[in-house]
Length: 106
Image 1 (tube, rainbow, N blue to C red):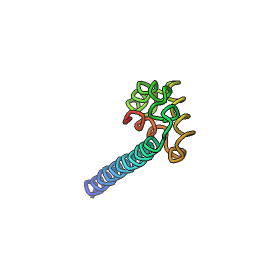
Image 2 (image 1 turned 45 degrees about the vertical axis):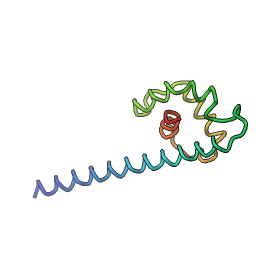
Image 3 (image 1 turned 180 degrees about the horizontal axis):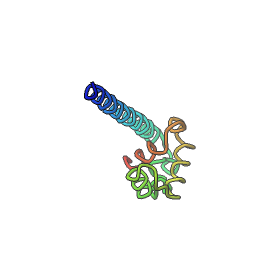
Image 4 (image 1 turned 90 degrees about the vertical axis):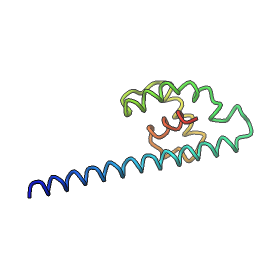
C-alpha cells in the first residue's frame, strides 16, 4: 500500500513539473514572438527594442538572472525589463524570467 501511494505521489510530482515546464516554454515563445513582431514592425531603428542599448547591455544580467532562477537581479536587467514593458504591450503581463529569456533570445 505504501509503495502504491509513493508511486502515485512521484507520478503527480513528475506530471506537475512537466506541465510547469511546458507552460514556461509556451509563455516564453509567445513573448519572444510578440517581441519579434514588434521589432519587425518598428520602422525607426532608434526606437526598436532589439536595437536598444539598454536591452543589449542587459544580456549578461539576463543570463545571470535566468541561471540563478531569479535570485540575481542586476540594474541593467531591471532597466531593460522596464523598457520592454513600456514599448511592447504583450510584455505587460509577462514574468521577469520570461522577459529575461526573451532578452537572451534576441
